[in-house]
Length: 554
Image (cartoon, rainbow, N blue to C red):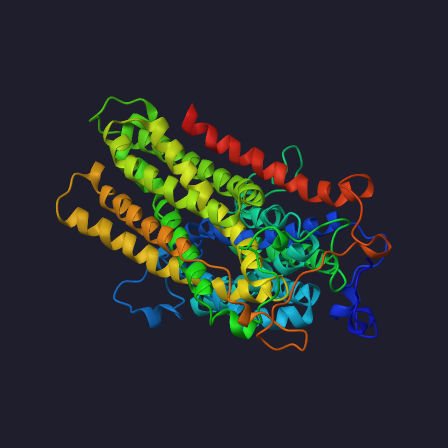
């Protein structure tokens, strides 16, 4: 049966950014779409590595204190007499994550109408522009401008960039929804793996490229942050724009050759689409919201305290010192390096888990995948305090690495979960609204974790056990996630869009074949070139991450 294409889908009278100009034609290979998505996600993934700038930002003004005394927060926003402490600059990341969720929720519907190309370009302008505005903030030393640049405007770029490929990939790969979204969202985790060492090279005093006489921007009086922001801003703007212009969407009702909708064989997968304005009216939307919120909260418990937790629990034993030995200054540096390697190792599992678990969900189902996250997570979180008390570093690290893989897997699997429940027509916009769970977890989860740990310290709990309460609380958090996942149900047919566009239908999905060769082809020939282009920086970042992670195993 031939593909059904609406007249609107074939109208190419709009401008180059118009959605109609992104409709794929005969001969287009769908395997060219994931590299375009990766180009954007690898750039915005730098958000996870913004912490590399906090300490250098505290040294921008030479011979000035790291922070002003007797000054309130609002005065700190405009002061030019002292540096910014990391307790203030870290708010940039928190603002960015909040606006990621807000922008994804607010502009998701616009994205579906405008198409991924226009949304991707706006994301490029916001994310790249956020770095350039922040460079100006450093130059004139205005903290409020840093919050505006990488916080608010950059956060909008994060939100639009994050959701821009989701709907497109789900529609191109209805037969591999989990794998397709996993590949793209893996890029968000991998962006920090590339961006962090790149930023450190640019802010170094040595050569950026070994053997080349191209020095970094750091000098005796300048940490090089402003110049690094400019380079990254321009680089990300260009690369994301290339990715945005490379997007193509399939014609309406397109499906791969011979593909049969799983709705015919699974009652759990929707046989139609739910309108964006109705999705939040269903219980399943809020249960999946709870699933994501609780899974992210549990992951943040590890991410937010990974380095200090490892150093506090194992101390000198990380570098082979006898238990109870007080390390000297040189040994403390070595311990910190091992902890940094641990963070790098967690990042690798966070990245790998996004692709592994999302791809596995194509085989075992989304609901079963999340049940695995919650059950296995409860077991591992319940065991980690015992492993810590026993001094078993290898099993302790292994448990947390698996937990982080499921944290990443939760992000990558949820778009396919939404497509199964609500259909593919508005999945990008629905996913955008669901990302408010991420913003909430980033704020609420981090605050709860810090308060519980501080309460344990104030109560005089031995320092090697101050994290036990947090870890046990995460068992309860995951138990709630299990219940939410249990309550996810197929949507009532009354919410499905009827042929006249209103809710209340019993729409069925008819398997289509690809018309005129649209979307055909394999991952070979010319399709390999875009993959190689994105693979080169990924390989470099992986090499740097493995060098860092090796420190914990040496």
